[in-house]
Length: 182
Image (cartoon, rainbow, N blue to C red; front, top):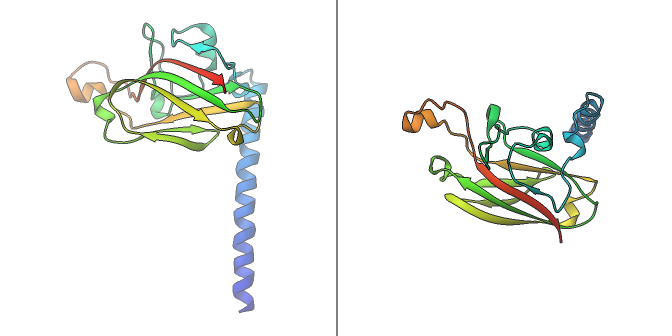
């Protein structure tokens, strides 16, 4: 009996240490990006700024991972089989609304599209085609001056569907995005 409680105590301590290590790793990665001059961890985009996916220099520097280059007013996600991620610089403990216009290709319509705010799932939906979507982000998820938005969906390869030469790995296409304070 005594041995069982010691094992449970060790498992609990291990779980706490693992969470702490994850937090330390995340902070270390953010510090590394600051030292290397990468502004993405700071959050380049401010609320009430419309991101037109037009390939501007600021946009290219601030879209974090999983973004292909702009293509005349839209931008595909899925580069490197990574989910498109963007950081905003925000005021802590405030609620926000993310307005966006995205295209969901038929190739990935069977699986849900999930949106995460600071690593917490806030929305899941299944759709196809061009859609306008507004997502509410509650203040309890905005604890610091950074808001990380991640779009999770399936990936697809256009060359395997319609015999094109485009063999990129894609996910969703984004026309615009704007974060507004509620």
